[in-house]
Length: 101
Image 1 (cartoon, one colour):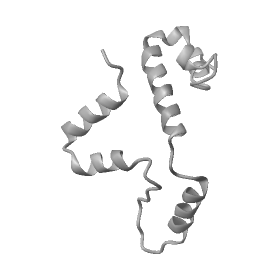
Image 2 (cartoon, helix red, strand yellow):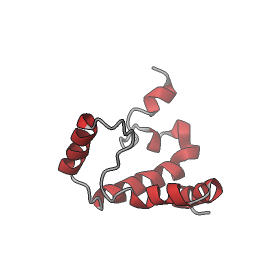
Image 3 (cartoon, rainbow, N blue to C red):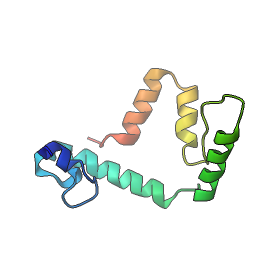
Image 4 (tube, rainbow, N blue to C red):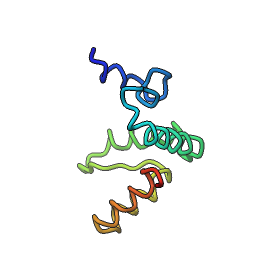
């Protein structure tokens, strides 16, 4: 396994890419992403039962529908994608995901 592949094993492990010296240029970004995902997980409103119900509905739906969304957790992102121009969406995602300078 290459050192790069080994570094990607687990983003949160001590040997994962968030703490990898070989990828130190990404440490600020990785730390912010880990914090963002931890906050999303801590504040999630969707349960495993909610997900299972939507998966069942998708598997048994004969309409040919391709997209199913579960819960309010992704509501702002989905609304942004539907309502914003591509340029505004990119700016929104950068503001949400990239480290503040």
